[in-house]
Image (tube, rainbow, N blue to C red):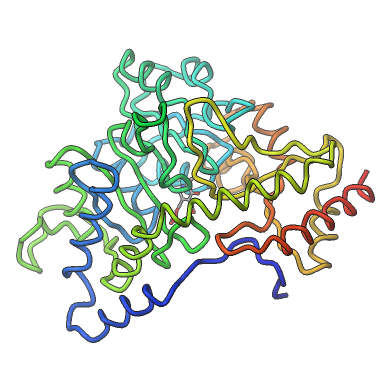
Length: 377
Ligand SMILES: Cc1ncc(COP(=O)(O)O)c(C=O)c1O
């Protein structure tokens, strides 16, 4: 069923269409000038030396773990209140995901819980900036340095988010040893499918480029494979699209912030709802989704159904990873107790949210949600 008000929608202007069309008139559809230009633009935006574009955020996570030599026997601390790819990537390199609790305000890894989860086998912390809200990087980096842990930032949902006071704020993705971005069409900026990995280290950047291209070292002959690799390349079409989207990113983030503010205004009279914080100290949120929390005991399924019947799409972001059947099997019965994650995850409801959402559409959602809540009590 096509929804009248979708959960997300890409924002593609004539400029993106022209950029992609131009590529189609060239002989370079992969590994050409657009890749170089997109990577340079990403590195410049983040003020880091190297950005390596890949075919998805998941591919980026996989390659970051490989390039940081994380594998069999290693433990990687991750949140469970996030997208499944986070744990899958850890499993795919042969390491074990260890789930730690989140804090109630940012919904990101709680540094105290991360500390408790550290064992002699812990090699890394995979910090996710969930819903575009920066994680507590100061505390997490201090902890990681003390225990000599690698830090990978998963900034797939958070491009453009910042930590620090105005003027000195730093973008997420510039704190850890590597950072991963994702450009699926529901994200703040898109390449259709795509992702990127940031690093300050030239040797690691070269390794990432080798791994994404079937183990060919940069500049090597097409049939020379220095190591076992993958096809995680990003096409010239996608890179051309990404370059224009990145140029427009800050303006698009302003639109998203305005949409979040409008929702908070429209929903403020529904006291039973917990709304996401619009402001957090020393943080600039990059609005990925607008997620409310329903009252304890309300039936989310009925609320979703009521909205669906009015043509309004919603999402359950995120069912905890450790409860997903696939993951339970991979964890071979290991007991995981995450009461905060589970209670938050039961109540979360993502509302339609995209750059060009109209105030009237948001009013329709707010009205329908209010009516559905009254019924669901
Ligand atoms: C936190 C997080 N990590 C990883 C991914 C995976 O990205 P992709 O879908 O591009 O593989 C996503 C999103 O989709 C995500 O939200």
